[in-house]
Image (cartoon, rainbow, N blue to C red):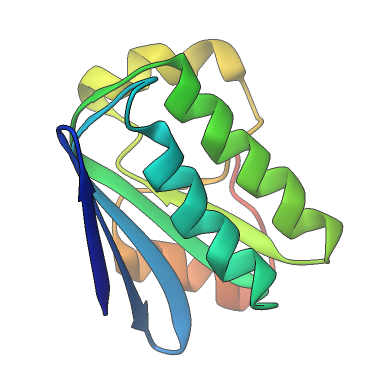
Length: 124
């Protein structure tokens, strides 16, 4: 488990049932987004095919954070992998609604693991 902090954002990498997770806490904005992007890029560069990005503990996520998650989704899918997000609801959900079906979302780690194990992507 690796944890890094920058500005108001804390990002931690961990594995659950052999699936890599990037967990973000705090505020993700243009000043701190590179930390989130670097953590996701590290998982992808290592060749992992499944990634859960947990943002349920973010107080704030701006468009740069959404762009970073979309970038990671695109990159992992280029290698036939899958990305599922947790926590894109509530306050953050209003920012994501315009994105339509671009992100696969889950309400919990258990649901995300189920989506990834079934090989299906549940789009919002």
